[in-house]
Amino acid sequence: MAPIWLKYLKNYYLRDEVNRDAPSVIRARIRQVTATCVLASLATVYLITNHGKATLLEALRLLGWWPIKPLEIFRCNLLTAILFAGPLFEAGICEGNWRSWIKRDTWAEVLGSWIGWRNQVAGPVTEEVLFRSVIIPLHLLAKITPKYIVFVSPLYFGIAHVHHFYEFRLTHPHTPITPSIIRSLFQFGYTTIFGWYASFLYLRSGSLIAVIIVHSFCNWCGLPRLWGRVEAGEPLGPPIPSRAKEDVDKFQVAQGRLSISWTVVYYVILVAGAAGFYNRLWPLTESPQALVDFLGKAK
Image (cartoon, rainbow, N blue to C red; front, side, top):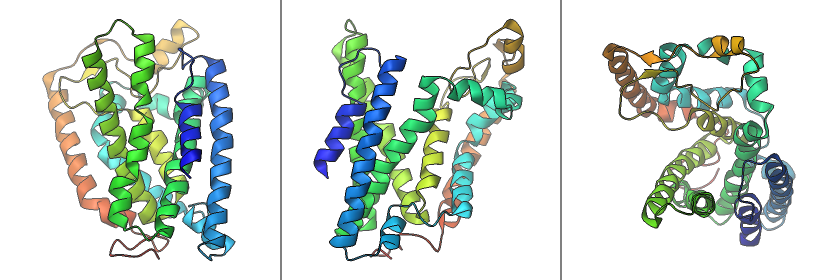
């Protein structure tokens, strides 16, 4: 499967175009990586059914496609929302953006752009298909332990994002090499950590849809604030282009400095969310459809 993984990496990350946000570049990348994911999934099904002596339904279960598990999808995303309780409070309450989250026009604006479609749909779907739905079943077929799968297989995911160093050097040729390397190492770190989490969710829930939605949600949220004061006018998620001045009034609050009490409450909620996440990590991911029992072998 290494050639397929390298083909995905080349098509989605290592193309020669300087502007990765150009619509033509995004469209071309999405077409090619979608074809790669289809090919990889078919190859994985073939290996599982022929070499693993499994039925087609058993193969689809290992790939996380079937059965569809609404409860597992909800619980995995609830767990992730608990972890991001602080950022959600900051954006939704402090900045007053919660009303825009439930408006159809907001999401139409985000998903109506190629950048938004890549970040919220195409990226999460194709990355989770390849790095979870394809790679993890092959590790299970090889009798790899669950802990190894959780902590080692996501390194493929982290390494795949080192391409940002290449693209950053193309778009910022005058930036010193050391800051560029530090930036890429930081990206490698947090993408690998997310890969640990997504792999754990996948093994515990057996749901590809759950990890795709979690991935999209995390892309939308970005990294939580870990220092500094909470400010107004810093929306969570991708920017929403406005067609007229009145749209700004709908989706943004006035710029300005909030009192320190808002910041204190934010950090309290941030810590409480992290504690709640730690406390509910195992209960909320428990499922009769789990692919492994984390005591040894695949189910």
